Image (cartoon, rainbow, N blue to C red):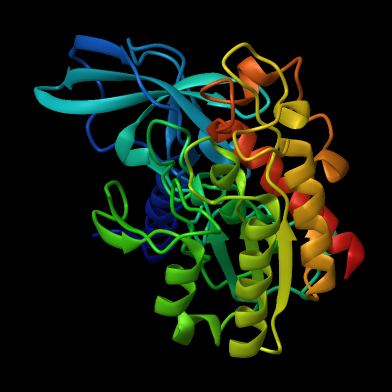
Length: 351
């Protein structure tokens, strides 16, 4: 029979050990037997790591570090490994930190999306001003999170902006790849949509009328597809006329929302030349489109946002091969994070 003092000491020791195991995130089954079947390249997506995750230095899984020091770090997968660990098939991602300073292998089950409530990256200067703001997004592939080949996993630049602002409601993103200002098209979109959706701005706004009423901040970024040869959008005057109609429609549906007109980001042709001074088949340059959109937004009570001004080094002629997935127009997943951060900083500074 245990002495009363020893009994309480034993109970305290057991609890302490339990807390230690919990805090360190020790795995239930030690890794003893590993067979690597394949290591493949994979599209980059942004992730955060779970609190009790282990980050391994190699696929031998012999050396690891705790994830605790990296809970506010954004990671991008670069490779995927299919392995058998202790007789079970597992998927492992090779992750690189957003700043490029750290690389680890992490089990797929130990990562989470950047939208997770437990991933905290709110900028201190945001305070509590944006906590309950509902963000709506309309436009084309850039704000939709399409990199020219596939969708990001809910980490388009407006999603990053929400996280940096500390807004709790999820972004209501109705941007669609290939969307135009002029047009009334619908299209099938796979990925997170996997259905037929309204494509062009006028149709999207009509179908989202009820949702628009609930939004506080509305981002509109569109126009690059109207510039494309064969768009059937016609003259620059026709494009801006339709844009004015749609911005006024948003104001009519929700007079209390703040509308931000985000200018199309820089684009380059097949030869790597900036399109700013290249006329399209309708007779206007990409630079003229951006200037005309800016004027249209201002005249119709929308706040103009120009990434070339608030984040001039994010995308440039010199870095386009690294920052644009197709080297022409679509940002990489990492570029989306940088755009989202820049927009959040700009919003914080002006409000």
